[in-house]
Length: 173
Image (cartoon, rainbow, N blue to C red; front, side, top):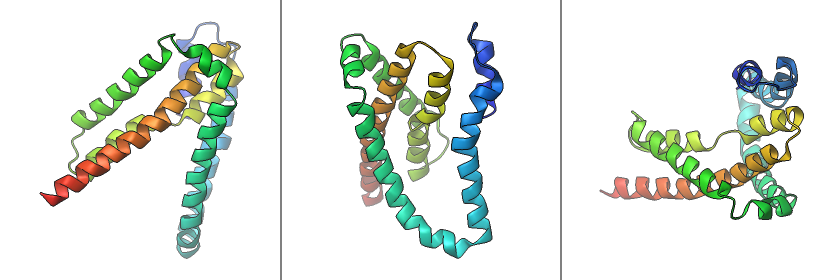
């Protein structure tokens, strides 16, 4: 994402008034830098990383819940404006298609298959939202991303339940 988006967006979207660094810089500071810091901490102090992992997992879950509430709460009027436009249906078809493709095209077996299918639908919307809000003056792009983020979160939880129940029933057989 960090390499592809800054190179592809200006090329794919004629008239985009953003250079590669203006697209890449938020991705570097919001995705790459925290990832690198985590890897360094885990490499340098595995025991510290193991100790802070459970509270950070809880913080991550709470952050996801907060993100969902804020996405809905701060964008209620924009989301209501989308009702009846077909954007929600298009987003659902897209997510279901991604999940089904990930499930059936996966070469993995068992739980790994479900993890791969879930990983495909649990994309990083922040990685799309930051350049979109910085590079485009069209609020409908941001609204479409927010709608897809909300749908993605809800669908990922529903799909995870389905995968978990499927794995449980497979282990009972």
